[in-house]
Image (cartoon, rainbow, N blue to C red; front, side, top):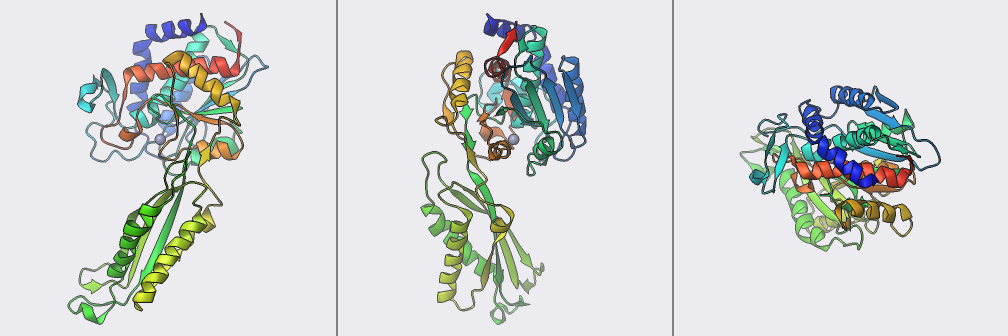
Length: 401
Ligand SMILES: [Zn+2]
């Protein structure tokens, strides 16, 4: 049967599959420098019999296997950019090592972007190859969008939609889910606070008002009073809020700073919109001012201006029967899977805003993304090829095999 033939093909081409993953890990592709990986993937897709495959001017590789007609199209989306390598040893080796170094069983492929998310991208391309070489022709189109600049805001996916209208009836995002299903994530917003003081010589700090100390008063309140009370949500989980950046001026070790700006990252659900956080922060500033006349802070209304509304998404299985179909298809390959949410944000939010059903499934674990232990288990990578290929059969329909 079909599913068995797909598994047999993957087993017989195991080494070639791993080699493709290694090849794309070995090409560095920090955000904004994805062109070489995109060209490599486009060339591979053409070689694997995709109907069309191009590397566009935006650093994306876009490939399509045209269906015979009469089925839904499935778009597989994965990003090919990665975060900086930092102190990671040998980040572009892509070598196969024993997983015990990371507390994992079996062999793993190590390297920057292995889990986030070149393993998923390679698996998407290989799923297309497997179907083509097995002579399985789909009814709907199977599309692979290997996109640039996800880590810096999603410009690659945006460009694939705006410039190439590269869309599908069903969208799968391959960000790491540890082989379970993810149906969405919280929205993210960034708030800043400017705290003003009065500069003076650092040798006589009592003559001025230290903006850094005043900012710390507010940061402490945020950490100790606001954060513990942030609301939970049955689907999205709890709101998170953390101060991530702080800056003073003037920048001199012998001057008491007159200005301090700090920034916060907040991951929120629809029950705690930007307006609410904005008013909570303003409330803390007003309270501090009521007990300290020298306290002078302004909450910057950045997300209220830049982001209209909620930036997270949730593909509700009750409203989208395709979630159940996908869960069943993936279960047929791997056994029953959990339905959950990602902790981080993905390009899925962009497709979801267009009203498309977005489902998440990818090899790798969230906890290793952006770390020096970036790796993916070989068995999970190969299982992802099986899942993507089988999902294409189930979602797009099979016209001949
Ligand atoms: Zn990612």
